[in-house]
Length: 65
Image (cartoon, rainbow, N blue to C red):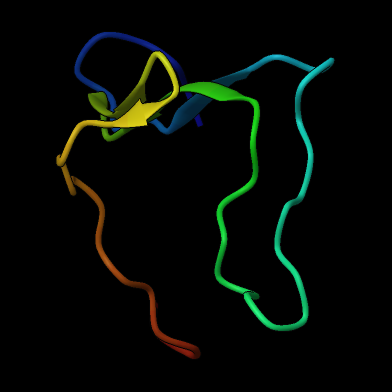
């Protein structure tokens, strides 16, 4: 892939000192901590550690191409 203007790209900016998995056996769907920014297809899905409400991606089903 390529990270350039006009290209579809997913980029994650994280704080290595704060990244940790907080999911538990009883609550396995908790999100990891320490993700600062997440961009999907060039749009912010997480900004400053908070969800933006954007859902620019799509589900990739097993076996789909």
